[in-house]
Image 1 (tube, rainbow, N blue to C red):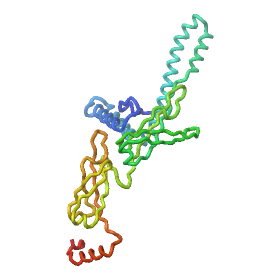
Image 2 (image 1 turned 180 degrees about the horizontal axis):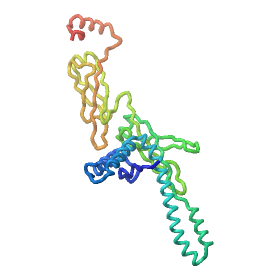
Image 3 (image 1 turned 30 degrees about the vertical axis):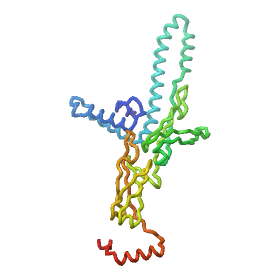
Length: 299
Protein backbone atom coordinates (compact mmCIF):
# COMPACT_ATOMS: atom_id res chain seq x y z
CA UNK A 1 0.00 0.00 0.00
CA UNK A 2 1.38 3.41 -1.00
CA UNK A 3 1.75 5.79 1.96
CA UNK A 4 0.29 9.26 1.40
CA UNK A 5 1.86 12.10 3.36
CA UNK A 6 -1.22 14.19 4.13
CA UNK A 7 0.87 16.96 5.72
CA UNK A 8 2.98 17.23 2.56
CA UNK A 9 -0.18 17.24 0.41
CA UNK A 10 -1.52 20.22 2.41
CA UNK A 11 1.97 21.79 2.41
CA UNK A 12 2.30 21.59 6.20
CA UNK A 13 5.83 21.16 7.54
CA UNK A 14 4.89 19.41 10.78
CA UNK A 15 2.06 17.45 12.38
CA UNK A 16 1.99 19.83 15.37
CA UNK A 17 -0.73 22.01 13.87
CA UNK A 18 -4.09 23.28 15.09
CA UNK A 19 -7.47 22.59 13.51
CA UNK A 20 -7.53 26.19 12.19
CA UNK A 21 -4.10 25.76 10.55
CA UNK A 22 -5.27 22.54 8.87
CA UNK A 23 -8.40 24.31 7.62
CA UNK A 24 -6.40 27.23 6.20
CA UNK A 25 -3.91 24.88 4.53
CA UNK A 26 -6.80 22.95 2.98
CA UNK A 27 -8.38 26.11 1.55
CA UNK A 28 -5.06 27.27 0.08
CA UNK A 29 -4.39 23.84 -1.44
CA UNK A 30 -7.84 23.72 -3.06
CA UNK A 31 -7.41 27.20 -4.54
CA UNK A 32 -3.94 26.38 -5.84
CA UNK A 33 -4.85 23.01 -7.41
CA UNK A 34 -8.44 23.53 -8.50
CA UNK A 35 -9.06 21.91 -11.95
CA UNK A 36 -10.66 25.12 -13.26
CA UNK A 37 -7.34 26.94 -12.69
CA UNK A 38 -5.20 24.08 -14.00
CA UNK A 39 -6.80 23.22 -17.33
CA UNK A 40 -3.53 21.92 -18.77
CA UNK A 41 -2.90 19.55 -15.87
CA UNK A 42 -4.30 16.04 -16.15
CA UNK A 43 -3.42 15.38 -12.51
CA UNK A 44 -5.42 18.29 -11.07
CA UNK A 45 -8.48 16.15 -10.26
CA UNK A 46 -6.30 13.51 -8.59
CA UNK A 47 -4.61 16.21 -6.53
CA UNK A 48 -7.99 17.55 -5.38
CA UNK A 49 -9.02 14.01 -4.36
CA UNK A 50 -5.84 13.66 -2.29
CA UNK A 51 -6.35 17.11 -0.75
CA UNK A 52 -9.93 16.26 0.27
CA UNK A 53 -8.80 12.90 1.63
CA UNK A 54 -6.03 14.58 3.65
CA UNK A 55 -8.43 17.18 5.08
CA UNK A 56 -11.07 14.57 6.05
CA UNK A 57 -8.46 12.66 8.02
CA UNK A 58 -6.56 15.52 9.67
CA UNK A 59 -9.65 17.55 10.62
CA UNK A 60 -10.98 14.60 12.64
CA UNK A 61 -9.11 14.44 15.96
CA UNK A 62 -9.46 10.67 16.38
CA UNK A 63 -8.45 9.92 12.78
CA UNK A 64 -5.55 12.40 13.03
CA UNK A 65 -4.13 10.66 16.12
CA UNK A 66 -4.18 7.27 14.37
CA UNK A 67 -2.65 8.74 11.20
CA UNK A 68 0.06 10.57 13.20
CA UNK A 69 1.32 7.27 14.62
CA UNK A 70 1.68 5.85 11.09
CA UNK A 71 3.18 9.14 9.84
CA UNK A 72 5.80 9.14 12.61
CA UNK A 73 6.84 5.53 11.91
CA UNK A 74 7.02 6.28 8.17
CA UNK A 75 9.23 9.33 8.70
CA UNK A 76 11.53 7.48 11.10
CA UNK A 77 11.94 4.67 8.55
CA UNK A 78 12.52 7.26 5.81
CA UNK A 79 15.24 9.01 7.84
CA UNK A 80 16.92 5.70 8.62
CA UNK A 81 16.94 4.76 4.92
CA UNK A 82 18.39 8.15 3.95
CA UNK A 83 21.01 7.80 6.67
CA UNK A 84 22.07 4.36 5.38
CA UNK A 85 22.23 5.55 1.77
CA UNK A 86 24.30 8.54 2.85
CA UNK A 87 26.69 6.25 4.72
CA UNK A 88 27.03 3.98 1.68
CA UNK A 89 28.00 6.92 -0.54
CA UNK A 90 30.35 8.29 2.10
CA UNK A 91 31.94 4.90 2.73
CA UNK A 92 32.33 4.23 -1.02
CA UNK A 93 34.22 7.47 -1.71
CA UNK A 94 36.10 7.37 1.56
CA UNK A 95 36.91 3.68 1.11
CA UNK A 96 38.53 4.14 -2.31
CA UNK A 97 40.82 6.81 -0.90
CA UNK A 98 41.68 4.78 2.21
CA UNK A 99 42.33 1.59 0.28
CA UNK A 100 45.17 3.34 -1.54
CA UNK A 101 46.76 4.61 1.67
CA UNK A 102 46.03 1.97 4.31
CA UNK A 103 44.53 -1.11 2.67
CA UNK A 104 41.12 -2.83 3.00
CA UNK A 105 41.28 -3.65 6.73
CA UNK A 106 40.98 0.02 7.70
CA UNK A 107 37.95 0.43 5.41
CA UNK A 108 36.17 -2.48 7.09
CA UNK A 109 36.83 -1.04 10.54
CA UNK A 110 35.50 2.36 9.44
CA UNK A 111 32.33 0.84 7.95
CA UNK A 112 31.75 -1.20 11.14
CA UNK A 113 31.94 1.98 13.24
CA UNK A 114 29.45 3.74 10.94
CA UNK A 115 26.98 0.86 11.20
CA UNK A 116 27.07 1.09 14.99
CA UNK A 117 25.83 4.69 14.82
CA UNK A 118 22.06 4.87 15.21
CA UNK A 119 19.61 7.57 14.18
CA UNK A 120 18.16 9.56 17.14
CA UNK A 121 14.38 9.04 17.32
CA UNK A 122 12.05 11.43 19.15
CA UNK A 123 9.77 9.81 21.71
CA UNK A 124 6.05 9.46 21.08
CA UNK A 125 3.71 12.22 22.25
CA UNK A 126 1.10 11.40 24.88
CA UNK A 127 -2.38 12.93 25.06
CA UNK A 128 -4.73 12.92 28.02
CA UNK A 129 -7.55 15.11 29.34
CA UNK A 130 -8.43 16.92 32.53
CA UNK A 131 -11.84 18.09 33.83
CA UNK A 132 -12.14 21.54 35.39
CA UNK A 133 -15.07 23.42 36.89
CA UNK A 134 -16.29 26.39 34.86
CA UNK A 135 -15.86 28.86 37.76
CA UNK A 136 -12.33 27.62 38.53
CA UNK A 137 -11.09 27.93 34.97
CA UNK A 138 -12.61 31.38 34.52
CA UNK A 139 -9.92 32.71 36.86
CA UNK A 140 -7.21 30.17 36.00
CA UNK A 141 -5.68 27.63 38.37
CA UNK A 142 -2.97 25.07 39.00
CA UNK A 143 -4.23 21.50 38.84
CA UNK A 144 -2.43 18.29 39.80
CA UNK A 145 -2.56 15.45 37.31
CA UNK A 146 -1.42 11.88 38.06
CA UNK A 147 -0.33 9.59 35.22
CA UNK A 148 1.10 6.08 35.35
CA UNK A 149 4.34 5.64 33.42
CA UNK A 150 5.27 2.64 31.25
CA UNK A 151 7.14 1.03 34.16
CA UNK A 152 4.04 1.32 36.36
CA UNK A 153 5.19 4.24 38.51
CA UNK A 154 2.81 7.09 39.30
CA UNK A 155 4.03 10.51 38.16
CA UNK A 156 2.38 13.71 39.36
CA UNK A 157 2.33 16.82 37.16
CA UNK A 158 1.27 20.33 38.14
CA UNK A 159 -0.62 21.83 35.22
CA UNK A 160 -1.05 25.60 35.04
CA UNK A 161 -4.39 26.29 33.35
CA UNK A 162 -4.57 29.91 32.13
CA UNK A 163 -7.63 32.04 32.91
CA UNK A 164 -10.30 31.87 30.24
CA UNK A 165 -8.90 28.86 28.35
CA UNK A 166 -11.40 27.59 25.76
CA UNK A 167 -13.21 24.28 26.14
CA UNK A 168 -11.26 21.54 24.33
CA UNK A 169 -8.00 23.51 24.10
CA UNK A 170 -4.75 21.66 24.81
CA UNK A 171 -1.86 22.49 27.11
CA UNK A 172 1.58 21.21 26.02
CA UNK A 173 4.22 20.02 28.48
CA UNK A 174 7.52 19.76 26.60
CA UNK A 175 9.52 16.57 27.07
CA UNK A 176 6.96 14.88 29.30
CA UNK A 177 5.91 12.26 26.75
CA UNK A 178 7.55 8.90 26.03
CA UNK A 179 11.34 8.69 26.14
CA UNK A 180 13.31 9.05 22.91
CA UNK A 181 15.67 6.38 21.65
CA UNK A 182 19.28 6.57 20.46
CA UNK A 183 19.66 9.93 22.17
CA UNK A 184 16.48 11.37 20.65
CA UNK A 185 14.39 13.95 22.51
CA UNK A 186 11.46 12.88 24.67
CA UNK A 187 7.96 13.29 23.27
CA UNK A 188 5.55 15.89 24.67
CA UNK A 189 2.49 15.59 26.88
CA UNK A 190 -0.70 17.22 25.55
CA UNK A 191 -3.51 17.84 28.05
CA UNK A 192 -6.98 18.56 26.70
CA UNK A 193 -9.02 20.81 29.02
CA UNK A 194 -12.68 19.83 29.40
CA UNK A 195 -14.74 22.58 31.04
CA UNK A 196 -17.56 21.13 33.12
CA UNK A 197 -20.83 22.93 33.87
CA UNK A 198 -21.90 23.26 37.49
CA UNK A 199 -25.18 23.88 39.31
CA UNK A 200 -24.96 27.64 38.64
CA UNK A 201 -23.70 27.91 35.07
CA UNK A 202 -23.75 26.19 31.72
CA UNK A 203 -21.31 27.14 28.96
CA UNK A 204 -22.29 27.39 25.29
CA UNK A 205 -19.51 28.85 23.14
CA UNK A 206 -18.66 32.12 24.93
CA UNK A 207 -22.11 32.52 26.45
CA UNK A 208 -23.13 31.52 29.96
CA UNK A 209 -26.58 30.33 31.01
CA UNK A 210 -27.93 30.53 34.54
CA UNK A 211 -31.28 30.23 36.35
CA UNK A 212 -33.10 32.89 38.33
CA UNK A 213 -35.80 31.73 40.77
CA UNK A 214 -38.71 34.05 41.53
CA UNK A 215 -41.70 33.94 43.87
CA UNK A 216 -45.18 34.17 42.29
CA UNK A 217 -45.68 37.69 43.67
CA UNK A 218 -42.28 38.87 42.35
CA UNK A 219 -43.22 37.61 38.91
CA UNK A 220 -46.69 39.14 39.08
CA UNK A 221 -45.71 42.54 40.51
CA UNK A 222 -42.24 42.90 38.99
CA UNK A 223 -39.01 43.23 40.96
CA UNK A 224 -35.34 44.07 40.84
CA UNK A 225 -33.32 40.88 41.35
CA UNK A 226 -29.63 40.25 41.99
CA UNK A 227 -28.00 37.90 39.48
CA UNK A 228 -24.62 36.23 40.08
CA UNK A 229 -22.61 36.56 36.86
CA UNK A 230 -19.52 34.42 37.68
CA UNK A 231 -17.23 37.33 38.61
CA UNK A 232 -19.61 39.87 40.18
CA UNK A 233 -23.26 40.47 40.98
CA UNK A 234 -25.50 42.23 38.48
CA UNK A 235 -28.94 43.76 38.95
CA UNK A 236 -31.74 42.71 36.65
CA UNK A 237 -35.14 44.39 36.40
CA UNK A 238 -37.96 41.86 36.13
CA UNK A 239 -41.13 43.39 34.63
CA UNK A 240 -44.55 42.51 36.05
CA UNK A 241 -46.23 39.52 34.47
CA UNK A 242 -42.97 37.62 33.82
CA UNK A 243 -43.49 33.88 33.28
CA UNK A 244 -41.43 30.74 33.75
CA UNK A 245 -39.35 30.00 30.65
CA UNK A 246 -38.71 33.62 29.71
CA UNK A 247 -35.05 34.53 29.12
CA UNK A 248 -33.22 37.77 29.81
CA UNK A 249 -29.74 38.73 28.61
CA UNK A 250 -26.95 40.75 30.21
CA UNK A 251 -24.45 41.63 27.48
CA UNK A 252 -20.74 41.12 28.10
CA UNK A 253 -21.10 39.13 31.32
CA UNK A 254 -20.44 35.69 29.80
CA UNK A 255 -17.26 33.64 29.41
CA UNK A 256 -13.97 35.03 28.06
CA UNK A 257 -13.48 34.75 24.29
CA UNK A 258 -9.66 34.75 24.33
CA UNK A 259 -9.53 38.15 22.56
CA UNK A 260 -10.12 40.45 25.51
CA UNK A 261 -13.91 40.41 25.27
CA UNK A 262 -16.65 38.24 26.74
CA UNK A 263 -19.81 36.52 25.64
CA UNK A 264 -23.26 37.23 27.11
CA UNK A 265 -25.06 35.96 30.19
CA UNK A 266 -28.53 34.48 29.61
CA UNK A 267 -30.91 34.21 32.58
CA UNK A 268 -33.71 31.64 32.50
CA UNK A 269 -36.70 32.49 34.68
CA UNK A 270 -38.20 29.87 37.00
CA UNK A 271 -41.22 30.77 39.18
CA UNK A 272 -41.27 28.74 42.39
CA UNK A 273 -44.34 28.02 44.50
CA UNK A 274 -43.84 27.56 48.28
CA UNK A 275 -44.42 23.95 49.37
CA UNK A 276 -45.31 24.89 52.93
CA UNK A 277 -47.64 27.79 53.72
CA UNK A 278 -48.37 29.48 57.02
CA UNK A 279 -52.01 29.92 58.05
CA UNK A 280 -51.88 33.59 57.08
CA UNK A 281 -50.35 32.76 53.67
CA UNK A 282 -53.09 30.21 53.03
CA UNK A 283 -55.76 32.80 53.79
CA UNK A 284 -54.13 35.31 51.43
CA UNK A 285 -53.98 32.74 48.63
CA UNK A 286 -57.63 31.79 49.25
CA UNK A 287 -58.65 35.43 49.14
CA UNK A 288 -56.68 35.89 45.90
CA UNK A 289 -58.41 32.86 44.35
CA UNK A 290 -61.84 34.39 45.05
CA UNK A 291 -61.14 37.91 43.83
CA UNK A 292 -58.92 37.10 40.80
CA UNK A 293 -60.41 36.38 37.40
CA UNK A 294 -57.13 35.04 36.04
CA UNK A 295 -57.24 31.48 34.71
CA UNK A 296 -54.18 30.34 32.73
CA UNK A 297 -56.17 27.43 31.23
CA UNK A 298 -58.45 29.90 29.46
CA UNK A 299 -55.65 32.07 28.07
